[in-house]
Length: 617
Image: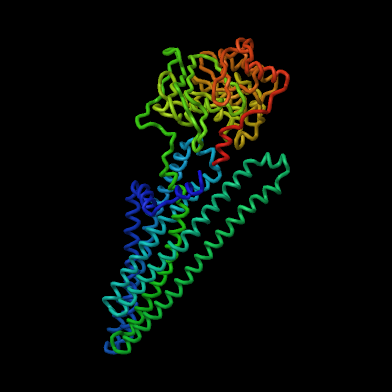
């Protein structure tokens, strides 16, 4: 994807932000509305308070009243003042209880939806995206939404309410002061919004992008720590990260300092407003149109109003920063991936006894997204039910792509792939992949117990079934030597286990899954010779009654395959069993087999189309 395309894709409008917010506010509107109404009531009490501070002063300074009457008037005004103050605080506390319930439900939904959405993005998307960056985007977006809704409903809404209340109250009590204050409030808000949108927004967006890169780079280095240690490259990785962090530091500092400058400008504006309001009131007092209590009213009003005005400037800045930080998670929410379930997708139902052909490639064409290079053109292959098929050929010849398309990790460009007569593009992907057991060359385990990893394809499996599968995979013995046995945590990506141990756990997982289609990507490559011998026996047992596709790098492991497909540049150039291919004149398979037997495997493999694609991205 070009920089221009990525920039275009990243554009999120305020309309998009509003839709996103309403999507999450809707289900919890009861709590949100209650919190907002209670907050508005609390703020209304705050707006009326200055009236009664003025009445207290007027009662104490009016010489026309008898001392007892003046004292009674002062106490009466004070009583209302105190009641308003208590109501203000009490209503605010009740509002916050409702608000906390509202906010936590929204954040819970956002983080769950974020994972739900990202998990279903295509393999192509994940291949071109830093996992650490994705995590950063989801968590940053969640907390940015928390700040966004706090700013809107607990910050801006009360501030707007107090400003309207103050303008009305002053307009009724001192029209000239109310008119001047109203004009300056409108101007203040307009300037604050302009500064936030035109000046602060671009800087906050750049800071957010730099922050994502910091998280992505940090995760990449930590995940690759074994390789870093193997090459003694800690200092080099420190330097790489420092360069990324330096960029973030500059952009973050620039955006934050700009925010401080904007706040300083707003502070000067507020001071000018205070001076003009008090000066106007003094003038009115001089000409007999304002009392000493009115002067106190204006001063008290300004201190209340000034706090809200200071906050509204800060809220607008925070609002823009929140919107910038929410862009990525909103884009996740909006994204409709190419590889998705059809509208009327049905579960895949596999019955090996029903049809002769289990898997069929029907004139399939395919190219990886964002590349113009065809991997397959008009490929047709039928794989029989229960057949043991092997795929061989140099790297980049199309073997891995073949099994990825069966799993529907990508959509075909042309033609159709069917499993048991059902077009896989029309079935639910979860049901499709539950019918396929995969043992990859480099298995990935979760940082969970060995029992949970083995039963991943059958989460309801009993402990007896888990141990039986482990025994068939020759994993039981080494598991029992671990301190917690099957309850042992394997570490991130299974780092606490050796390569051979991870492979045996992956094989046990496939055995327990008991799927009708089995894909083996050189499943014994990480095992020692003795374990490999027994695992091959276990795999032969596992293959019985199942359609098996083996991606073979060591040709010695597939001599018992029913059929071998020889790939080259996305085409099947030969097929047959081991014996027939070895007896064929000028056989490419025989040449590859002989070279491996003599340990003369050529290094002339075509460049991996996926690698080229990833580099192009």
